[in-house]
Image (cartoon, rainbow, N blue to C red; front, side):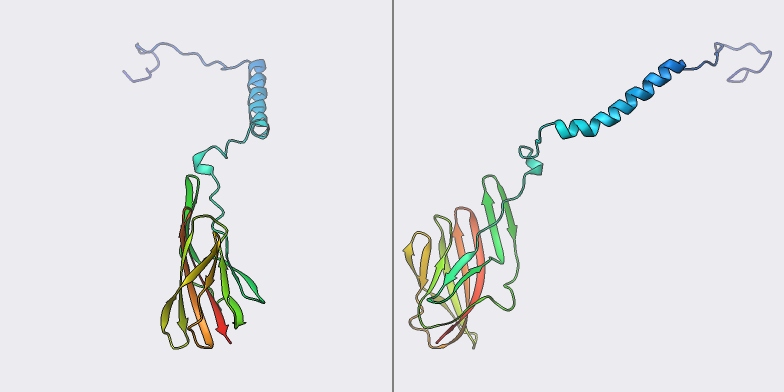
Length: 182
């Protein structure tokens, strides 16, 4: 006996009849329902509320740290950190980089250099390197909660590089700039 039964043989398989699964009217109803579902999907998405702000995988990262602001009697300069770990709420980001070349510069000055950072609770450390490669840590004098003055009184005239590192409640920042003492 064959699985499907050969003509004239007895078989235990029931007899099947071929018939249309849907009537013509049923087929039209299925096409209309399918088309409606496909058309309603994008339209429904446009009308549904945006939940991306509350979905943790789709939260936008924090903007990152504000620039470190430097000032002399004649120049004001915003220096963006080249390296930072920054958090806001429960979202954070870190990036490492190198100081830009050429370094941003406040130019020549014979007066103080001010440093400002627009967040509460921050501390900064600054080290200065001369053209010969000698590095020295500079004292910062806090003049207000967000402002410091670099104590450069003992440095001779010349060109310098300053490396700044700050730490506070939102994370840390590293930035660098150049200056010339006249």
